[in-house]
Length: 321
Image (cartoon, rainbow, N blue to C red):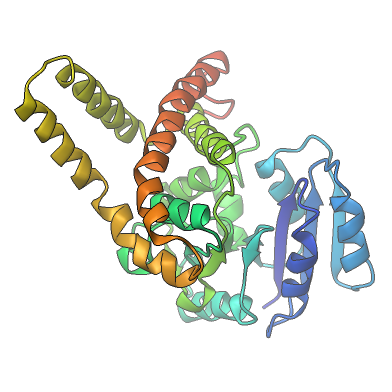
């Protein structure tokens, strides 16, 4: 069965050569490769055309102003294959990535698609700390409830069409929305361990804040994960109220609860240090609580922005719920 690989990029000049090389050297060569550029200003489009222009089954399309969902939909619409693999720039895929996804789908004809986990692949001290905060280890994940990221997923076209494709009105969180839509329709995904991929975490606090702000904005816009966001507001609100008192015992209780909140990311630090052996271990442990706080603040400011956008657009231009 034919398989296409689709991606959308914007201002990824530093990573598109790696993306093209990895797609062209897969052990199972894609029948089609379509990459959409959403209006890059750093030479990404020219670099893509240089890397893929001579390949007979590859196409590079320009779609200035397209968001991620719109770019993916356009790439998918430009293909004819029944199986659609979706990925992103900035991800490290092994040569067996596509074959692993195909094997998983072929082994389960009733599944909607297959996926690999997105795992942290840090190189620096900051990236190791952020990887511990932002991304779970493979052994922490329940594949039955894991929402496939469009950094490593293969979907049947029939299910994509049944679900309406990626929501073009949603700027962020489009892959989670699609996953939830497929689940609502009775579809399910299977995990392909050999399709797990690595990604370098953001390299600066500002980039991390913006990333989580955008994710939370998407949640609010699409009406997703509301209980999780409310619980975060409640926890920080309760902590703020507790700090109004001068009780030492109250402070110690809060410190203990804060420590519990950090157990999981701190538990990931050894794995991050193995991935980035030159990272400063003490600094990594110290950065974890700071980055945890930054991420929570980003989400708590981004979610209301998404809710406001949802109200302005009457539920998200697509009836998202």
